[in-house]
Every structure is written in C-alpha cells, then in structure tokens.
Image (cartoon, rainbow, N blue to C red; front, side, top):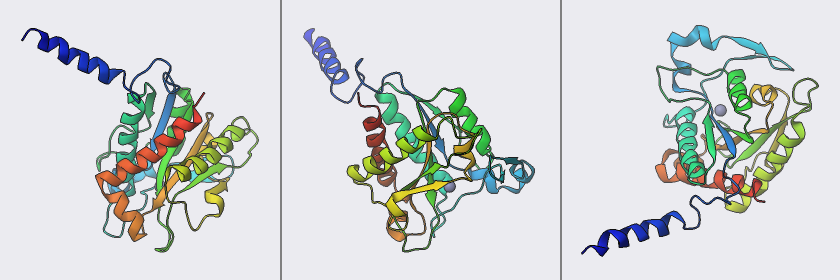
Length: 247
Ligand SMILES: [Zn+2]
C-alpha cells in the first residue's frame, strides 16, 4: 500500500518529461510570443464611440483606433473567434515554456480596443520574438482559407523590421499549409503585402497579421464556430511557431 504514492509520483514524472511538455532544451523555452486577438466585442458598443473614433497617422494614412470586425452569417463575432484561438494557442505555447503576451485581457461588450497602435506597442515593449495578430476575413461567400499580411517598406516605420516580418509571413504560409490549414483560394500565394495596416506599421518586432479564414464562407464558418475548430486553428498556428524557432 505504501508504494502506491511513489508509483503515482513516478507516473507523474514520466508525464512531465514526455515529449511535447516542458523540457529545458525546447526551442520555445523562454521565447516571448505576443498574440493579438483582433478587435474586441465592445468596439460596437455605442458607449465607446468616442474612444473608437480616435485616429493616428500610421506611416501612410490616418487610421482609426480599431474596428468591430466581421462575423459569420449566424452572428458569431470575429472578436470572439480570435479571442478563443488566442487562448488555445496561449495554452499550447505555455506548455512548451514560452512566455505569451496578449494584447487584450478580456472579450467583453463592456470593453473596447485597445487601439491598434497600442496593440503594436504591447508587443514591442515586451520585446516579443514574434507577434501574431489573429483575424478572420469577411469576404464574399465562395472565398475560403487562410492568408497572411505583411507590411511594405516604409522609411522610419517598418524599415527596421520589414525583412523579418516578410520572413515570418513566408514561413507562416508554408508552415500552415504543410500543417493542413486550407490555403486561401482568393489571395495569390496566400500573401498580401499592405502599406496601411497600423498593427504592422507601428510594431518594432517581427509581426504578421493572419486572416485564418473567411467568416462568410460556410465551411470556414463552421470550423470557426466550434471549440474543436478553434483548437484546430490554434494547432496550425502552433505548428508554424514551432517551425520558426526550430534550432
Ligand atoms: Zn479583423
């Protein structure tokens, strides 16, 4: 009988050192990953109209604080989708010893933002090794699949980080495709280079925006709306983060 606790303990030790759990030589150990779950439920709350109307020059254009985001045809909001994927991904990353910095700490009708420039600042101030801004698209119904957005070269803005942004974006496209994520059928090479994205332009650490799927497409929407689907998106993102930090 007395042996039982020791046996249980041995079992636990076995679990702790199993592949995929905390290990000192894990390439993700000690890495700082900033996750930016796009939008916030309260962005559409009229109470926050003044906050939401703030604008800032982002290197190319004057852009607003944040937007409400899109939704599936049945009303499942992008803000909730990005929040849930970010939470799932946080668990996966923390299991591997990474430090995760989130750009918002709630998903609530009673909260707004933060503004995109503050989201970029959070990743930058954390000294993130990579920042992933998680979104979903609201494109015509036949469009489906994921694509990635990286910035153009903007002197004084993205010039310090654009090469790393582009490398991260290219790795994400190949890594997520290899992991099995459906590639966008409406964006060439699943890569969009844009000059007007504040999250990218304000960030001084390697950052990409990923549009995980099209909320207006029935197949993508089905996956996005379920717990198992949200978990699947997180696993696809995890696969690419792992690949990026492989030694
Ligand atoms: Zn979005």
